[in-house]
Image (cartoon, rainbow, N blue to C red; front, side, top):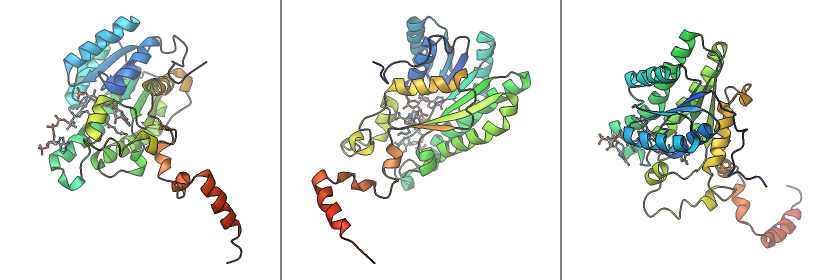
Length: 294
Ligand code: HXC
Ligand code: NAP
């Protein structure tokens, strides 16, 4: 029996690839990186905390035997991002994939945000993703390197918008626009750009910032997600591994939603009828069939 908790690609699917993951020391970045490494990739993981990166690098290396380099970098600072490019080329001689995964976020009524609080999220999500994309893109194009790949993690509210996370929604919408724009502009240089929009995948970083204390019941996944569960990190890792692999060579400019149907739940006009029982439908259908004429 196969399961969404199993790895999906062939053992050596990413062998020889060098994959740079921003925010790769924790959460979903760490899970995706672990799977890429199992599939044969060498990794560069970045975030602001060197000690977190070192611990994750050691953990992944001892699990898979493949190399993981941790480079501290604040993605908001272009000079630090350029240093990641330099360190990557100095160690591995190339980079094949950039996974834009680093993010900052917290819930708050928008009018309570200071100007700096608003900026901090947009700067990490949008400016940080732009910095990494520009630095690696420039390098690849200048070197005339081909078969490169940029994958960005967004959210479904990149296109629906969402109350209480407005800076994040603005930032992710910008990242999605960047993905679709560069998919066309940089295809001639052999660079593909895609995105994943995950629904809820429990991580410490997200959960402690997005669920106000005491509100856990109101945000029940059973009510929010038609499939009645959270995502499993392996199923996100499977999709990401496919998108950074050569199996997806014809996919460019796509955003793939992986959310158990969550964003559509509130979008469909009549989805609220989900609460009606079979018995209530028996009665309602009988009544509705009697409606004739205007
Ligand atoms: C209001 C807040 C705040 C909060 C910080 N600020 N937290 N304002 N509510 N909860 C304000 C501060 O007062 C300050 O404003 C400004 O924001 C900057 O705060 P710092 O702590 O100095 O910033 P910094 O150290 O750079 O930290 C950035 C951060 C932090 C975004 C605030 O949370 C962080 O490091 N996050 C990284 C990881 C993360 O967020 N992971 C979750 C991603 S989940 P003033 O005016 O006082 O200077 C995600 C999921 C999306 O994206 C979809 C889910 C389904
Ligand atoms: P996470 O563990 O908090 O991941 C965020 C990572 O970004 C951390 O490793 C953090 O490390 C790094 N980071 C933050 N600010 C940075 C900066 N200025 N420079 C460099 N690195 C920085 O949370 P997660 O849930 O795994 O989120 C990963 C991605 O998935 C994010 O893009 C998020 O928006 C997206 N996402 C998550 C969910 C979910 O349900 N979990 C749903 C939809 C989308 P440091 O703080 O040490 O720098």
